[in-house]
Image (cartoon, rainbow, N blue to C red):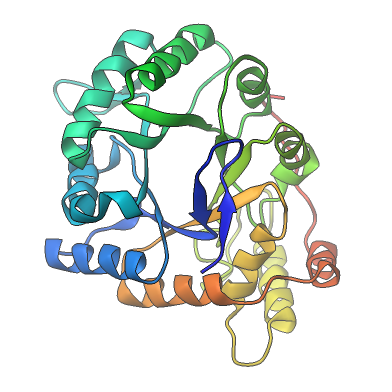
Length: 298
């Protein structure tokens, strides 16, 4: 397993990390997958308070509590469940963040978080107030570092300018190259790492039947999948190349892969251990798939 520094922090995260949202097996199955990941060198585990109404955090916390010192634990905040359970509302206020972190810590059975992330955000948010909350939590020792999960360039620029974020989680794949237009280079220049999610584009880059995706037609998706196959060494799988495509940009610290089954774990591990993508291969892949750009929130 290879590791990369997370932004300006002193954390080193595995190039492939465990996206815990997908966990849906029995408690025994989930614990086994989480333990296997840690045993194989995956050290970054990402969850959120909203996943399964907090039960996801409980699962992760129970599984990893005995090896807490080996784990880089990340969760998210900002989506508040309504009392009647009918849905959630966006709440990035200081008061809510300071309340929610204690609940996450309890569910995760830890007294600190390595990374606490704002789970979304708009340009209309009380951004200074949100930052105050994260900075206070750092002072209190409840979190080590903080970041945001956002694809909105205008929101990202505000946090880069006003805060001490060390990471931005954003969707990035061969089929969603929007971050390449500005954000990847911009964040790298400011020593802020990208946590790449959606690297397999809902499985379309891992063998699922082509269908329209974002602004791409099913035909373009099929072409991307075919290009991956052509550029993948014999004996390897196209999904390994898809993950390495994301990792080839120096701004990306880790590809956060949703892992639900033993097969998905095995594939994720293979992707982590595959060879880095040569620039000429990455460029060949770019030539086959038109780049999208952010049309909103610029």
